[in-house]
Image: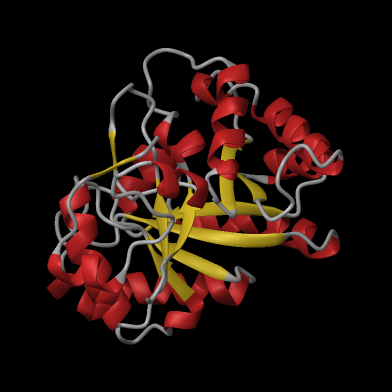
Length: 277
């Protein structure tokens, strides 16, 4: 069975747009349960100004709590804890926690960049320079995000050549991996085939917004040699997961189609919706 490596971003991407603030103890518990389910890469928050994104308030405390529990062997050592960092100030906060991996983010279009982070694409890369310098000095790994790679809500279609150019620029800057994001769910097999010019070893692609699209798009990602996908669980009770997550222990005691990895056959033929629990 071929496997896809999951980067769970629900505690950041899944919660940052919630209308109500999700308490820190609940977010910490979510992280612990996801780690117990087998998640090995867990993005737990963002070092941003609380007045800008109130839902991410307390990210530093959550990171400190999880890293402390990891040292006490109360949190799985195999789970890498990461967080999003927008600028030099955020990086200083991240370094104070002892994090060994962070993420930076850019946009594939000027309109989305200005709407999302209030600066041009070039200005966003200028912000990355001190962040990357600090990361290199402190031996911190950096993962890059590129949003709206398959379609922009403001500009429509996006030139794949521009996406590849920006992704390579992030790699050259020092990112060990780039997530090419299907931000608005416009990706398909034909659109993703346009990225053949980018080495699979240098990138991962954020899988589509609905589970049915996940199933179809997983197959073309596998076919193109890509094997890493972001996943975001949702806060609402009873939400059907975009990608399946379950511990082996759970698989043995229940009949639900739960698994840590999506198999090639499920991707190729279209998996049924799988519940995250």
